[in-house]
Image (tube, rainbow, N blue to C red):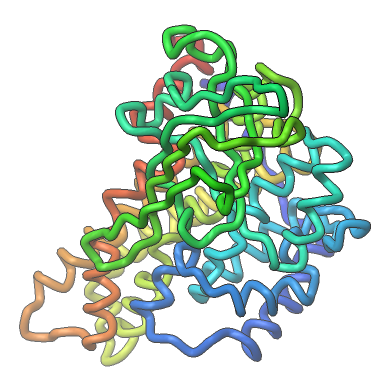
Length: 385
């Protein structure tokens, strides 16, 4: 455990990142679409192509990508600041989120020159939106058991299978899919590869999944003998497991694994400050502040490792597990606090926000890898398995 915690040693945001924060705050003050808290609580699941396009015009989509592709070529610390500020106000970033966070960096690291030239400028312009094809029916977070298969053909590849819980798959242009190219599901990590799949190709069917809140940000994607060009393969055939683990380090390490309930927490705190209510909840508020400060520091430490070109997969799993536990604790604790004083009901907007996050909170420990899978990874990293 000591070695794992040492790898999350204290790190600080550099002055340049804090200076960048001021620019982001000014932009959000001027450009953030007006919306009530229960809408802003959707934030990185909220698909708003116009807002993403506006952000991209400032170079803030693909913010870490090289300037020759249209990116801002800023460091991982600046991206941390950007993400933190966007989530803090509940900006609707779902359209470009995955392309900026992981698909763009993955293509930059493992893609061919042709793939970089074809896809990275569109990501940076906010014109090309990506989704992730990892989970499958009956596989869940056990990515090594995927059964979707791509077989070589005389002109490239033929793709067959199905993906599920694909965020915004019905709204995106491309998917980066983890599929099997050799062997069987029992071969586990061996024989997996990643492909860029144009979701407009013949044979691709995308069906939205409506959740209990009435939102449709997930989808199920079917591949029926989809013809892929030879250059749809990212990196080397059979390297998919190594590549997807590098991708998951980006997915699991950022502020979005800490701040999913932050709009609710801010709204509750603002209401408590009215009429001296905060005095009655000091213990809960103090616990939240302590947990949030610690998790934020751990996330910054991960960002420092990413900035040095490392791929802290186990450490990211640890932060993601702890972060989602915090995100789930916030609506639970606020529900209890409000229920303990029924004679002082909060505003309707705050109650709608609480209702939304109470429904969504169970998914926080599912998306990006279930709690059970992550704890297995952590145990292996500690030498306990």
